[in-house]
Image 1 (cartoon, rainbow, N blue to C red):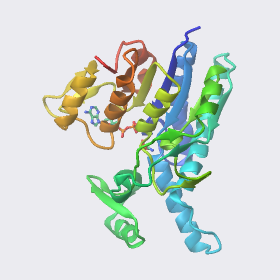
Image 2: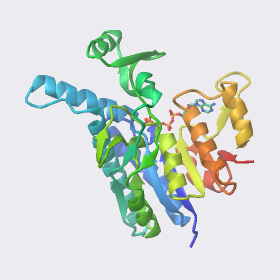
Image 3: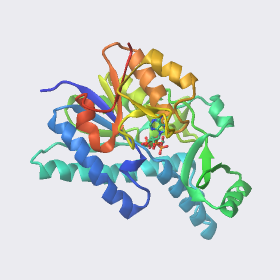
Image 4: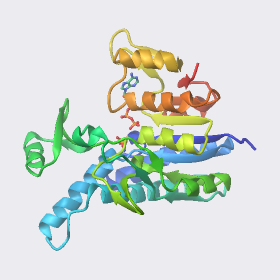
Length: 311
Ligand SMILES: Nc1ncnc2c1ncn2[C@@H]1O[C@H](COP(=O)(O)OP(=O)(O)O)[C@@H](O)[C@H]1O
Ligand SMILES: NC(=O)OP(=O)(O)O
């Protein structure tokens, strides 16, 4: 048996946003995961939730406006809803894909809480983009409700705080499932952000960057590979410029240098690079791989993707 433990971080293109869209999209992710199961990896999966958590929060807020007997759902609850709803579609799709290939392997989703620091500066500087694009009028309405928005090329988006993940409360359950060679989906959407108050965990109004939680989880289960399945086959320098070049390999030192040069876009490629640096720096045998969702197997075997190693 291949003893390699890997953590796979599935990006937004694995899901789409709306219910039917997501159901269709997860089939592709399920196929990528099944390929890795066939290679006999022990796999923990985490996933994006930015569009969905925004959609759920808007829906729940509107619902409470229309039916005042229902209270507004806090962002942490919407994070939990998104974990359950995306996890459900994903575990179902993976189960079917595996059975169609003649493989029986239990797949489960763990509702996962992640500790954040109440004094994290992110709480006073919202930066995490969630939900769909909005018109200027819709954006103004959000601001009037006390929410934050940012203007992007294609319109306005909501932004929320993205505190750093510190600890994963359900890590023992995740480890136990991995050790039992079961497929585990955990810390979806970066995990539900919680503040520890004695024995109580209080949901925080935030959405954690899932790339950073993926690195935390990969470290805590002592994975040898952290695999980001996203929308690009390789990381680029001079992204989308005439002199764009795609990278096969990055050392931590090179990655830090390019980060300082501003080569990686905030909120998209930058957190993957930061997460990769954090994960591989802790142990020289580890590697992080960034590649396209359709190239999972090739990325892991070193045929494509950008590999990040300590040296
Ligand atoms: N330097 C870069 N090299 C390659 N892709 C980049 C770079 N900077 C930004 N990107 C864009 O970032 C995307 C990945 O970020 P994003 O879609 O936010 O992540 P996720 O797939 O985890 O949801 C890529 O598909 C690509 O379009
Ligand atoms: N939680 C999170 O990082 O989601 P996105 O990848 O969709 O931004």
